[in-house]
Length: 340
Image (cartoon, rainbow, N blue to C red; front, top):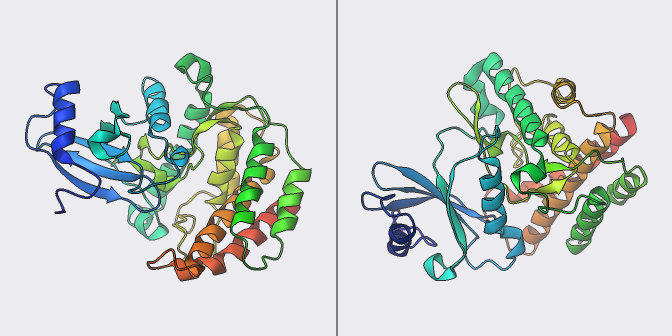
């Protein structure tokens, strides 16, 4: 396959489908390139020379259809597009696997930058970095202000018992990738279970809300929230906890986990929490639980990657460092719970 015809994207079949379903949308010959891929969903940039779109599809040879549900991603973007929440305009959902070998959806291309590291943020300078991160909080407030029923998402998840289910689910994930002693992780899991907070009214939860899952424009405002594969109806404070976790410096140079917290001008967790509380009107007194849960969840995810690495199932740079990072996440989780 050439760079213009990447694997998983049959441009001829795609063109035929678009001409049939959206006549006049495409004006010139289509070219496509893979923007990002790997174990997660594949994202391609598509162009006809004048207009640009983005295609999202599951990984090649994927097994876990539920984890890569295109219909869910397309549904939540379609529901949110008419609201204040910045998402790309959805164009089409195709569940016919004959076209690309898997279900996929098409959305309009949005110009913007996903900032993944402190080094990438540095050229913005402290003030612009600060504005970008604060607008991340304000956009989260906008998302959580959407009434799920009003946008047709009343049945998008099962909010009752959400935290308990999440904790059990990540505990099972941990058991599935256990092949070494991890001091403190069972203690952290048990402590989280003992101190389960009472969830506020359910909201549309992104599930992986952080700086590198949004596109920031030249005006430092958020142009689009991306990567909705973990979204559901649930406890909105789980999104806040994750954002706070990513705003704590890891103190590990060359960390394979992207965190922007060390960028000059990056607001500290306290300011982010206070801004969210002021904007949303929600009680954030239990935020340390949600932050500790985020540390736990990431520890489990990283341990899963480390486990696959030890089995020789993951190749690439940085994977050998992941195992050393897991204890850092466990310690941070325990400390966060103890100190509040």
